Length: 277
Ligand SMILES: Cc1ncc(C[n+]2csc(CCOP(=O)(O)OP(=O)(O)O)c2C)c(N)n1
Ligand code: SF4
Image (tube, rainbow, N blue to C red; front, side):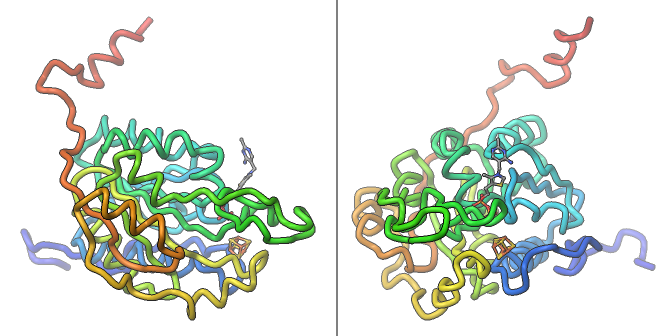
């Protein structure tokens, strides 16, 4: 038993629920789950003070595997749900988990406006360049020449560049991580949570079932060769020209996060009253 008044700290394992993940053996998302729980322990947070919001996809299953509050919502809508939650409960640490299909395709519009609004959320996108859950359709980040049974010869479509788009939309914290380096992912997530405002952490997380060649990402990734910049023009040049495998914090700006008004904004309780019949 803890002594009265003793500060209870939580280890990474305390943030893991008893629910066993159903991901394929070798899926990168296992490491991302481990990194999230490690980051929450590093931040000395308590499970009841953290909420994880997600959409739909293999990656979006993450909230169920933690002991934090969780909301496994509708495909592509994790960010608006999380935005509402954070606006109503600014005391909670809100993390949002998504995949490249969930977050950049059906949820792409919400991504732009979350970057622009700069509400204090940490957005973790597990990017495997494919729709894993629905059996391997190309996603916005799929290479144009990736040929598969569902897209013979490839889509021929230019890839979506999430980091550049985040920068252009006003995101202030832009990082890329690799699931094969869970300590690195945990450190970046912890830094993202500490950063005030919207923080975007794109995690390259291989889908070993539909993109087995992504096992080779471990040889492709490298620490970004330069320190993070706070200059958006320099960051744009770097992000436009990198090959997608530079890992680390790549851009950190200082635009003030969105805060609820100075008292002119209505309290949630008052708004609810207006809808009572
Ligand atoms: C409105 C709606 N459209 C389509 C689907 C089917 N669907 C479920 S998950 C998914 C794609 C998930 O891909 P991604 O976000 O990349 O996650 P992954 O499974 O690769 O982690 C799709 C299209 C759905 N559930 N709801
Ligand atoms: S289908 Fe791909 S993304 Fe989904 S659990 Fe299996 S390896 Fe992971």
